Length: 182
Image (spheres, rainbow, N blue to C red):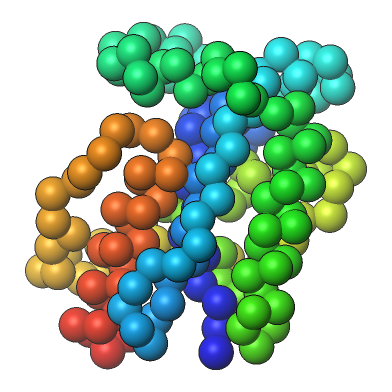
């Protein structure tokens, strides 16, 4: 059985090499229609500079973040934030653990064919760390939800943070998988 993981990133740019202050992910159990283990890690954005990473932030995205509530903005400056490389290694270990709980097959779903998965893979490459999935294992949630617009995702709950967004997207994808015999 393929392991399905929904990932969501908070990003400070829409470019393919953004500063990423948070990674959220959740496992989808397609057969049971439930969600499984979750991963959430905030990243110390100053560690990008410490590692001389070529990651960017843009004013439009920063302005959008400044309009968010205090709880949402606080995740980017959390005392519990990890060094960027430590966060990537943690996510790598979590994904590999999830993969091995299944049959070894994996789909890592992101919201946009050129967004979350690409930005995360580019960050792995910039840090010289092997990503825990290949391009063949990319899934595009945005493409699927646009093909089934009649299947409503329901009301979004929680804050606009990576883990809450990953959970909402995963619940919607499970609903599409069930109703569309996907």
